[in-house]
Amino acid sequence: QVMFVESGGGLVQPGGSLRLSCTAPGITLGDYAIGWFRQAPGKEREGVSCSSASDADTVKGRFTASRDNAKKTVYLEMNGLKPEDTAPYSCAANLVRRSCSGLPGLIHEYAYWGQGTQVTVSS
Image (spheres, one colour):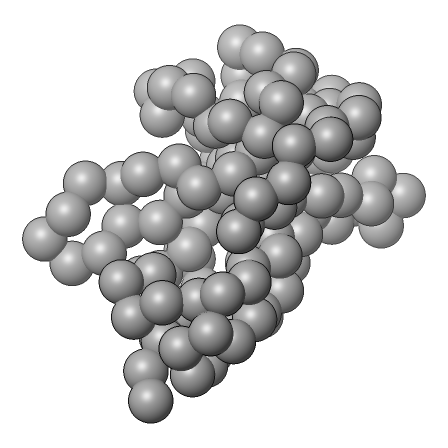
């Protein structure tokens, strides 16, 4: 069964940065838009960024997804981190759309969820 594997999480001080990685050896990454999501305890899962299959996105924000299809890896650059950003972060493939322009969209369009990597923002 295909499943993404996330890495790169950890403890970071407020205002700091992290880069998360997401790989899925069992799929052709270039066939899918890949979304990044988080779900803090007691809260609903929310999308934070998305990388289109074409990797042609130009939208950049505090959280920005990018990819290297040759390495079968999608990244999430996180800057200006805040304590409320603390959560496990996971990625998934959009089975409906190949283009997302940085916006993850509807969660039910996604599959192949990974276990996530924990990001903790604290001083």
